[in-house]
Amino acid sequence: MRRTVFHADHEEFRKTVRAFVEAEVVPVYDTWYKDGIVPRDFYLKLGELGVFGIEVPEEYGGAGIASYKFQAVVTEETARAGVSFGGSGPQVALCLPYLKALATEEQKRRWLPGLATGGIMFALAMTEPGTGSDLAGMRTTAKLSEDGTHYVLNGAKTFITGGVHADRVIVCVRTAPPREDDRRYGISLLVVDTRSAGYTVGRKLDKLGLKVEDTAELAFADVRVPREDLLGEENMGFRYLAQNLPRERMGIAFGAYAQAKAAIRFTRQYVLERHVFGKPLATFQNTKFELAACKAEIDAAEAVVDRALDAYDAGELSATDAASAKLFCTEAADRIIDRCLQLHGGYGYINEYPISRLYADSRVNRIFGGTNEVMKIIIAREMGL
Image (cartoon, rainbow, N blue to C red; front, side):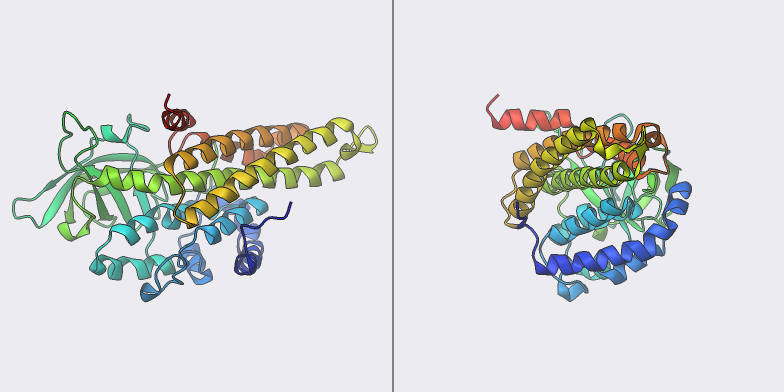
């Protein structure tokens, strides 16, 4: 079936990204993988390529294109090559929407030009040790000083993608205690300068997958945050988070789809080249049946993510739509990648093969952005159950 979600501009951009990945990432990716991080100056190259600035308004140095589809192209192309742009994902996928929607004109002038160039890297800090998906249970606090000039931030965050290289972090904090009838009240968003006294980057977490993404623990000990770095209104943070979750979950769904599509590509190439019992592995009926089943399932996932992309760009992607897309695509991707690894035999378990890395990388898709169990709750609630 002809795919209609991308147009000529997207395909031209795809060619540019593919050439960049092959020239700038593939030759050095094994080193990044071993180091567990990309060099900080690589993000400046992404800025020059235009990856960060597409959705940034023109007056702040961006292209001013209000569409997620260019970001989706980047996702497809990095997955296709079996590589990653490190911890840069939250820059556009998560942080930019908050800044565009909530920042004052003065804040936008300070932050958006640097975001577009990669000169300022952003991360989003929501999760805390022991709270998981229960954001209303967060205990990190920010108390306004007596003279009203700054907040004093104390607490800790964990699982923060991009946390090592970040220059600014949007930190979810409690500026007021929860109400008896509303646990979500009292959460605010502060844009914290990582050079501030008392701000500490803890461990770079050793993960099962996503080895190139710098995922860190953060700690705050009496960090002074100027009041002018409050993002949006005080105590309204949970509402802001909820408004951006559909975009985040759609992005996870699309990433899972792209990983599974790449797994099929790598496996098709492998079975054509690999010989077993004197014949190409691709000639065996089981191989054909397994890959045919994977192809049928990825076609279904593609239809789901493409509809989600169109709905998002049209402003019509609901929380339930996004939850459904994330649930289906992440579950399907894990099934597909597992079958593809099986066709690799023992080599599928070796990290130098892309399928092994995809297997490890994809597993977290069913966890972050809200676990798939939470997605089922959202969907069931919409069904009146």
